Length: 401
Image (cartoon, rainbow, N blue to C red; front, side, top):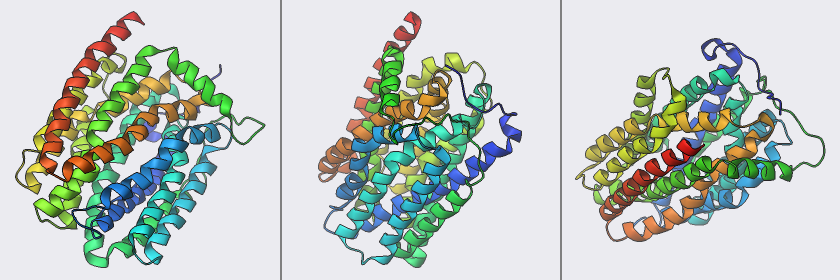
């Protein structure tokens, strides 16, 4: 099957790539600020942070159900249009959080609406970079994309914490809505090489082709399974355990929660910058789960810290170790995927993250109600053991391929 990706210059001088990267980075900053604002607002209701888990679940639940729909839609409609339109609707949804009276129901409703929209925005957003550069430049594009993403993860929580302290939660929602609109405007003139199929608005055949492609490569399928398990170990403790530890046990404010939440991103950004243009990436995929296991040790260690700064330092180290994982995994998938099924395949590879999130949040909510520290230690031990098994098993499958 022909590859429809644009023949482009080196990523460093590809203006189209940088236009897309900056625009999606601005939207990503809006995502991070809105997410932080929703979580902090949920801490204001109920006892012991009761509404944190329902708020997170209201966002992740729709994505579990609708993620494949996003992949099917992405095969029929121009990704640029989908991303701009999705960002506009996300801005309107978050805008409601800044206008409506702040109640648990309103907060959960806003989270649900954004979750529905992100079921389309997530797979299309991952596809957009792969369809903006030619295959020889995919790894470098993914590395830069991870730097950009981690800058937003770093700046988002810190900016949100400062904004909430200065102007309050609801005005912070208005800021994030403005960033969605600004990011969408930056994509209006972007160019993507993507074959548009005629016919129905939803291309379910792309989903079946994508699943057949993944199933024919057991090493890819098992990477998704082990990666999903690692996400299960991380997502709940980060989204539920960290806010409870920082606010209720360490008695810190929103700015410090922003520092702790952003510290993993700082480490990931630092590690990605230190990687440079790593050679031999085809062989690098063999070591992905060693990096993940090393990062998991940091997750367990975080539960032993006595204060917010110690936890932030541990998360920084974990992010540093995790840095090679994203570029290696994404490039491995993108190099082996035809452009006309790219969004559908990436909707599958994103699914383990989305499917385990609500379960992880529920389990973490139960554990952290008693002692959040136990949650981190247990998750770190189990995840480290599982990812070491994954390292040996994936290498065995790669040797057979």
